[in-house]
Length: 156
Image 1: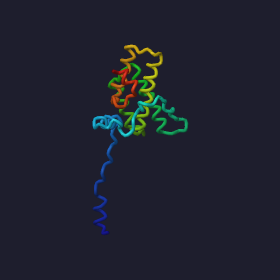
Image 2: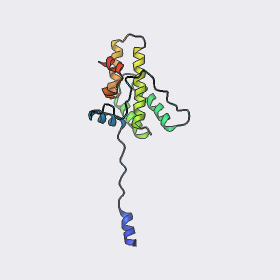
Image 3: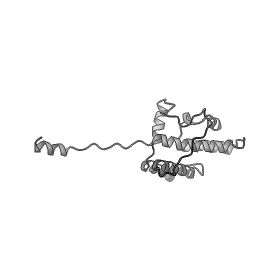
Image 4: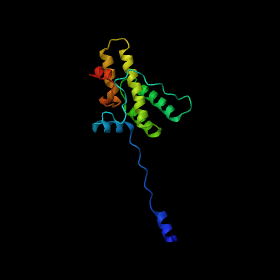
């Protein structure tokens, strides 16, 4: 290879890496495309088993990020709505962390299941509890195809 070819080869611009899409956008896109499974079901509606707890004790960065996301979701949903600043905080979290779409689904699944279990714990569902369930799925933009069967009945 001549010096001219070597210089020319080095001068070529390198392609920019594409930014990964937001995990919730991937879920929504799959839902709109009719993929009710969305690659892996967020919640197995036929299963009453709780997923195992997230193990962040071993210094696993992804597990720690999942724990932080769970805490963030609980905090921003404490009042039943996500304010614009809180939504931006969540989006910044998604951009900075190492979480995959599956990780986000897992965290959302755990939160949705916890809300559902809390609402159903006393066997009586109030209008406020139904409103809370609606707020959770609406504010977190979780597609109906990913809700567990009991949540569908609560939101209906």
